[in-house]
Image (cartoon, rainbow, N blue to C red):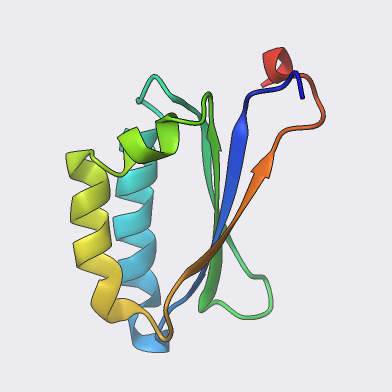
Length: 105
């Protein structure tokens, strides 16, 4: 495969009473994450029918960038802040970019 971008979809189910706090903490993390040189995108999306469900769409420029992201202060702060807000453990799926070409990101 010629494309090197790594795409991670993180699925999160939050306790109803923590939706707003989770959004705030996650947006703070996303705003810092997009400043990382290895991050091409960091999208936060919320289910339109169930406000307690979110997907983080993280696009990394290399295979090593996700691990570097997990070493940042903002990620560690987010992880520890939102852990008690989860209705169930978060899950993720990892992908490689197919289209558009990496340069299109």
